[in-house]
Length: 510
Ligand code: ATP
Ligand code: MG
Image 1 (cartoon, protein in one colour):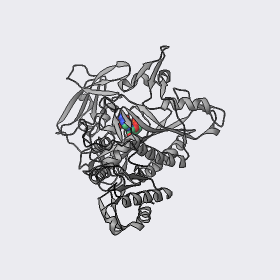
Image 2: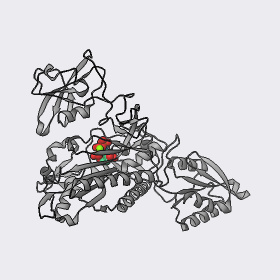
Image 3: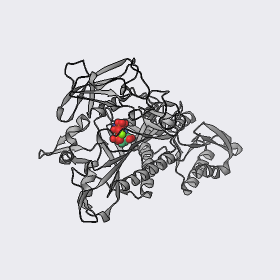
């Protein structure tokens, strides 16, 4: 394609609300455009091209693993969410609205109910299972703090897959297959990532893993072992139990816990004085949807004592309807790995994918049953698997940029190569530019020809900002028969005999 014809509105201006490199460069490079508010973005031609490339990698690998693509209605009847019991639970992130006939609808933040509804209508027998169906479609979550550009939008593109099985073992086989499939996807996209144990929260289920793109700007803290493969989101991380004696000072923390249908309870958490409370673990320990710190009150419904204090702090020390022990403490840096006695450290990650062993959480209430070999009707066993496709664009740039702009990885780049004609008034340069452009296109190389009537300075700045892996610069040295190839990562320059440039690029790109 020709730069002169493409809508690529690059700018030097950094958006006011942008702090992350990916947010700044995706806007400045004219990949995306904010839509008059927070968390909504238009994808311009280059952004759409990158999104399509990433999406294609995701689709190819899923299809190879036997998943089938469908496309669900984005507008979801609220009745389906009533059936699963999630309508009340989901809270303010869920956008609800009515149609002209006063029927209730939501914009899908995730599509378990919709996919279960699709399957319960079309799958009746064990002979039709297992099944893994997915879509790559929009999601809407009315996030309380949309920020960081594509990282945390309100409308975003997700790949969501759902698998259906006759039994748990088969679901676990698929879960392992999806883990491998995700590893291939993230590897192809050129990402440095780590698979970590994750919190399964309110959904329950036994296994859940997150795919973390490692980056200092990541919002998630992950605990990794220096010695072995162990890695976990801090929300789910465990360490070897520490030993405390009777003289250990303890602290009591007061919270208000929120449950379904507006129910609240006061709860206390007891833990060693120098240990931090892990709020997700604490939330799980009292079965709540959310916790907010509260004043000390007289009547407390639940007291949870950290497991580490089991020997020294008897439950009878506290008065409440319910007193029990649970792991509610945060793993600290320097703690000991339960698997190998290695030292645990913190690192930061961007959650790019999440895979989940779901069980019958949705199939039961929604009546998604099949007839087994004995003709008995039983609920299907499910798994669910998400990838934040638009968030991946941000993740790729968080890992691959410098102070000049984006550095796209091979499979995510909007173009393979950019041909820059330095001086558009120089006929020889223009002629060679056209020739190289056509020759590369014939070899199926995705090439952007910078044929704009601009000076060389802004052209090279745009190349650096856009982050296409290679540039061919056709400039003054052409009078000596030479051109230049620049590799965007590292900005290394090579002089090449003009006649050989097509061959050199083919070798680099293919
Ligand atoms: P987070 O903890 O970051 O809010 P989540 O746990 O709510 O994410 P899931 O429900 O597991 O996310 O959704 C699957 C994937 O969708 C996530 O792994 C993430 O990559 C992506 N995702 C979730 N929320 C957003 C968002 N607001 N903007 C962009 N991508 C998102
Ligand atoms: Mg998640």
